[in-house]
Image (cartoon, rainbow, N blue to C red; front, top):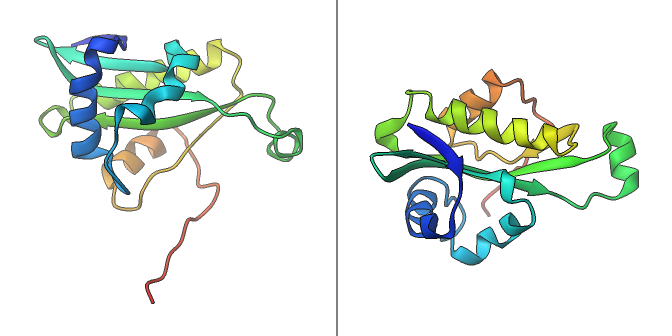
Length: 144
């Protein structure tokens, strides 16, 4: 497996992965990845045999000073999306991608990283737990 920075030529394969495994609310389009251009080192793909088998990308959120103070942070990274092909799970792909993304956030000065993880994404939650992520809020819903 090769880990490398995303190239625009990867978009079709990344969109296929995103829509197969990370589209919880709506179809993901190329427009959803626009913030990636502001932090190019925050978009990584895992490639095997010329096939993208996983990706992880994040960017820096513009956070108000009051929130930074409450969080005890100075610069916040946000993991926007991550997916690994079902056939490549439990083989270290997600771990490698998340490690690289966190490393890039740290090199760029982040001291806090946030993400949203749908309750049905139990595999992703397990990975985030392994990395020491903690629950910071609950997003709840009730059908009427």
